[in-house]
Length: 171
Image (cartoon, rainbow, N blue to C red; front, side, top):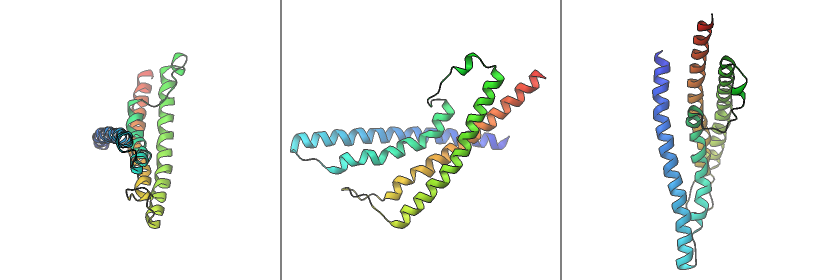
């Protein structure tokens, strides 16, 4: 299973990169809001881009983390099913969940890609003090859903392997 090993290695690197990116973005958001408050306190005036930059960065915080959070099981979840279903059925539910994430990631990757191309072609720029192209913000969508696609593919393969192994033990 060279493909699975390569996918797992790729996803491990992507996970580290996504968490590092998210830490940098959170630091930038906190710094921008702190500098906004400080400049208003000291000078009485503020810079608009300190206030407007955090919402632009939030999509780059959220979307690249979809896959790593799914892999770590850190999405919002309800665990009441574990108490009354056999382990074999729980494995099937996890497989179904990861398969739905896989299908959704394909659909949303395509939609995000199309939106990014649309805004790139339009050439729009945010009307803040910094000139940031609108397509740059939309690029977070296909990027994040491509990462989710890779992670959910790994999880579906792992779930299938577990189910096959579990069924061989039962038989």
